[in-house]
Length: 232
Image (cartoon, rainbow, N blue to C red; front, side, top):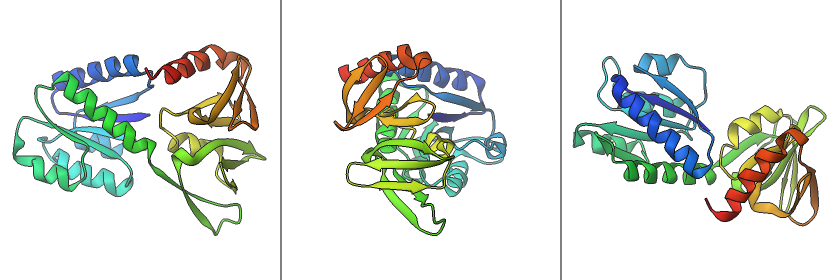
């Protein structure tokens, strides 16, 4: 999950990164964090972020305007704002921000905001083109059982239907960012919610699909699966 942190004061960047690390360890979530000292640095990045934690008051382009620009580039991005002043609250809400936090940050409130952000990503809709390159499909990410490489393209399997897309597996890695998705093998991305049987070297999905777990991923997969089952 890719997160941008932008604040013009390094002390607050360090504080947010520290909280993200704590949350990551407690919830078994891998964050790819990118930090920025101003809006121009964020806009020059070619990374497609899932979540952006933005300071409101910054020189040149404030966080509200930056959020608007990021939302134009990626309508699904989740925005979290931090500020020393409440006067920007209405503007943040108009951008459908998940949370609006006053500085200094309250740890538990910030963690709750992250949880809400991740829930929104879990319920995201994925749009993709089929093999004919003309037809676009739209499905809920949570309905995907697994994605599999198929002759350099991909097969997307849901409970009721299969789709065949020209998109490479990297497209799905970039879009299926929820914690319910994991790659047990370089050729697959699977949804934890559909695991019905598990052995060290393979899993059964939806009671009918067998997917191998690569040897070099078995330990990591086991740890993440057990945490998922235990709700940690």
